[in-house]
Image (cartoon, rainbow, N blue to C red; front, side, top):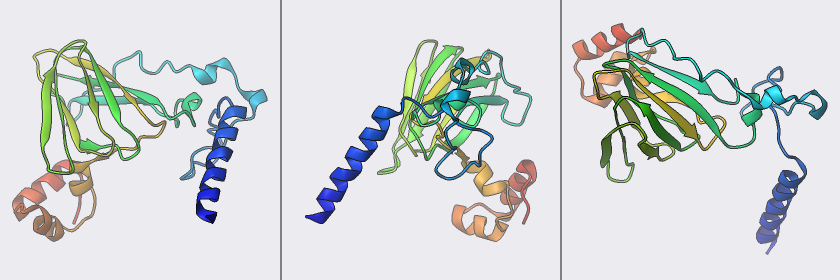
Length: 210
């Protein structure tokens, strides 16, 4: 009987807090903790806290993946703090790819603005792959935490905008998680079935050691 009462009280408390506080603009000068940023004092909040102009220009795609992601997360866009939403811009040069990655903190919706993008994700229950070539105006959703990717599928640069169900969706790229650190090659070889030469090559490309 005590547990249900505590749960109800918790729900009422959170609802009450949401009702009396319209927003929680991030105080980016405060420590970045696991629970997020502290709220900026209301008197210090301005309209500029709710506007982000960083998605208007293309990102630098002169890199190994020929792609760029420009995020509008709470760390840069203080106004989304506490609202459970954020956005990003995705630029893909010809041959560009966003390698297999996951967002542990939120689901993603992608809309293609120009070009063609092959995108897909892998389910965790049966490893089934869902992928499709998307064209201008197409939208695709990527459920929270699932491995997914985007590839430029055409002969021209591609542009997409993505939105997330979290102001801090997080990001872990599988290739970098395996090969861009000091995880010993022997362990990678045993857990991925790659041979030593392949692992060493990938570590060399991505800057890993060990």
